[in-house]
Length: 208
Image (cartoon, rainbow, N blue to C red):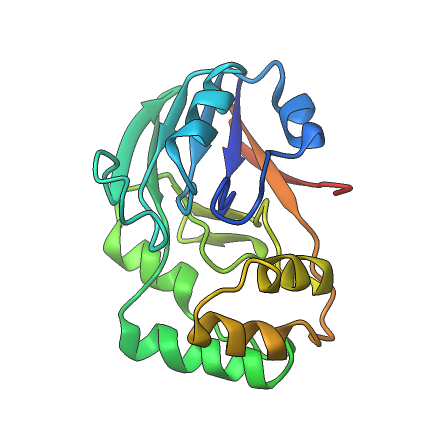
């Protein structure tokens, strides 16, 4: 059995000052860590490499990390794994963000994303993605499409923390609204177990 830690949207040190201790403790003993983008900075990958080897992709917040690819394909335990971040064109992303913000977090639109990723990578056995900050597991025509959720979540405390940094007007305006969100956000990571009889994905919440 091969155990793989799956993380996404750490945004560290972009927004988080440090990786949560619970995350590092929970990943101990895995054979490999896969990061599905929005890393936040090279120091995050260096910290994760102290736990296990790391493979990562570039998210839409990782513009400076040009050494990271937008997509990785790995063979692990005889299975074909594809890692992407999961963001789509601005014509989809911007209206979805506006809807989620104005609804105070109750209407984040990501319908069709797992099926979209399956169409892009029809030969993958497992597709790992992030971006939505929502943990989700789908089985589509034999392919496991897995989002471990986000390590970094924007709750009221995090919104106030970012406002204290005096961000630009666009981020300031967004934070003023989203700090009143009513949906419950939970930080999380995942573990993928690859064995001779199949693949299993599990999500683990972080206490914060």
